Length: 335
Ligand code: TRP
Image (cartoon, rainbow, N blue to C red; front, side, top):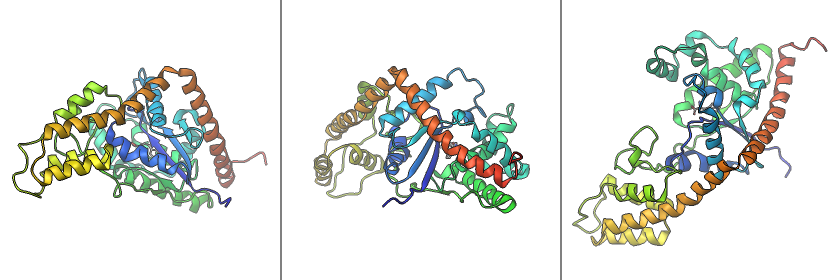
């Protein structure tokens, strides 16, 4: 049973303030993967420079993202949890991959076109080669699986193109990375205003953040849209009511959920009671995570230790890959 574990790599944007959708959508999956795979989870601080050249808040954001991921259950002893900028080998691989990356292809990337439209006065080369840096992040660990959402699939496709070009030109070094796609299996976390998923950019009052105080959580849940209740037994739930049940399913006990399902089905439900219960269960779910995040953020020495430890693990592994790369490319003039 000493089989070598397959390698998983993913990058997390240091935008901070994760919400319930991020928790059930991504982090809980990272946490599930940490026992079965050799995992490299990285805070993509360098990528953020392509659109956010002002770095004043970067350190705080990086710390928050690390603290949030650890508080949600990522174990820095099991996985390599590190910052992109601490693994210098990535920059070297990025340079080599840039020679395999064609400008025309990069210009067609959806995220490039979107961001270029959004920041017309800062269409820098780093933005254009964003997918090359992401490919370097993945390939530096010769990762096979990359847990990412749908919006990153095109970047992975590009990474596979570079793998094929590299392997074809210099010899087999990299496996083709594939998306570890949990998008379909995922519980979608609905927003509190009845429409769509919980998300950072949409309505902040309809999104529950892991940093929210108990009073905010209660306020947001109590504001969720309801109506005067069903009038016919066992009727179909409107979307906004279905969403409340979905949220309850995530954080409440089965008994609680069944209780309100029954009350809905026999038309005796009082949404005020349901929301009060949901609010309390939400508070019980979120507040321990929030408190843990804050405790970690207060302990800068601990965060430094985690970052150093992660950087060492990731750097050591990256250097093994780079030796293979330099050999394959005949950039080894001393031997
Ligand atoms: N581009 C990813 C995002 O926007 C973040 C990222 C950077 C990443 N490097 C990565 C994801 C490597 C997976 C693998 O979310």
